Amino acid sequence: MTSQTLEDQKQQGRPVSAEHRRSMIASSVGQILEWYEWSAYAVFAPFIAGMMFNPENPVSALLATFAVFAVGFLMRPLGGLVFGIVADRRGRKFVLITTMLSMAVASVAIGVMPSYAQVGIWASVGLLLARMVQGFAHGGESATANSYVAEIAPRHKRGQWGSVVFVAIFGGTIIAYSLGGAITNVLHEGAVAAWGWRIPFLLGAVLALVALWLRRGMIESEVFVEEAVEEQLQDDGEPATRLTAAAIAGRPRGQLVSVLLLIGMVTGITAAHYTWSSYVSTYAIVERGMATQSAYWAIVLAQIIACIALPFWGRLSDRVGRKPVLYGFTIAMALAQFPLMSLISDQAWMLFVASTIALLIVGAAGALLSSYMSEIFPTATRTRNIGIAYGFSVAVFGGSAPYLNQLFNSMDVGWLSSVYVIVLCGVTFLALTRLPETRGIDLSKV
Image (tube, rainbow, N blue to C red; front, side):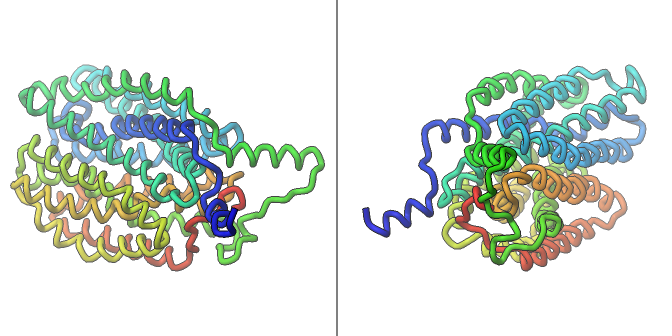
C-alpha cells in the first residue's frame, strides 16, 4: 500500500457503510417532517390570526400570530440545552426519537384546538403552549441532527453530507408551502380560514409515525460511542489520551468564546433565511396584494431550486474550506438585500426571481452549518453547545425576523427590515474573522 493511499484513508476517516447512509436518510426524513410541521405555522399565519386571536383588529391579530411564532423560537435555546445535555450523555438517537414524538403531539394539539370564537382567550393561550412545546423539541432536534449527521459523515465529504440538514429545512418548508398552495387552490378562502388551515398539522402528526419507524433503525454515532468508552476508561483509572479543543492549534481558547462567536456567525444567516423563507410570502400577500396561492407557489419553486443547490455548496466547502463560502454569503446577501426586496410586487414571477436569488445565497451558508458547527466543539459537549449557540441565535435573530418585518411595514418603515438583515450579515462577517478554518478535521480529536 502506497503512502499516498494511506494518506487518502487517513483524510477520509472510517469507511462509510450502508447503515451510515440509511441512518443519514432516516435522520433527514424526520427533520423534513419536523420542519414541515414548524413551517406550516408560518405558511398559514394569516388564517391562524383570524381564528385564534381577536379578529376585530386584523393587524394586531397578525402581529400576535408572529409573536407566538417568535415565542416558539425563544424556547429553542432551552430545548437545545436540555436535549443537548441528554444527547451528550445518552446518545444522539434517543433524542432524535424523543423530539419527533414531541413535535407530533404539539402538531395534533394545534390541529384540533378550538378557535377564539369558541373559547376566547384560551385559544390564544393553547396555541402559545403548543408552539412552546414545538420550539422546545425543535431546539433539541436541530442541535442533535446537526451533530449526528456530521459525526457519521466521512471527513472528506462532511460538508456535502452535512448539507442534508439544510436540505431538510428547505424540504419541510417546500412541503408546507406546496400543501398551502394546494389547499388554497382547492378550497375557497372562507373554508381555508374556517378549517382548511388545520389540515397540515393533522397530516404532519400522521406522517411523523413513518419518521419514527425509520429512526428506530438508526445507528448510534461512532464518535459519540468512542467518547463514551473513553470516559468510562477514565472513570476506571485509565490515562486520558484525547485532545481537547484548546489543544488544537489555531482554535479559540475556551468553549465559551466559541459559543459566543458561533452565535454571532449564525445571526446573519438565520435573519436572512427566515426573512426569505417565512415572511416574504406574507409580505407579498398582505403588503403587495398578491394572490395567496400565487405567493405560495412562487416560494415553493424558489426553495426547490435553492434546495437542489445545497449539496453543491457543501461539496465546494469540502474543497476550498468553510470560511471562503461563508464570507461569500455575507457579502452577497448584504449587497442584494435591498434590490431583491424592491423587486417584490403583486406579480408572482417577481417574487419568484427575488426569492430564488436570495435563497441561493442563504443556502451557501446554511449548507455548511452542520459541518462547521460540529467541527468547532468537542464530542463531549458538541450537541449542548450547538443547541445553546444555534438555538439562541435562531431564536433571537431568526424567530423575531417575521415579527419585526411585519412591525416595520405596519409603521411604514419597511426599509428597516433590509437594514436589519444587512447589519446582522456584518456581524456574521466579523465573527468569521475570529473563527478557525476546520475543513477535514477529525471529530474524534476535537
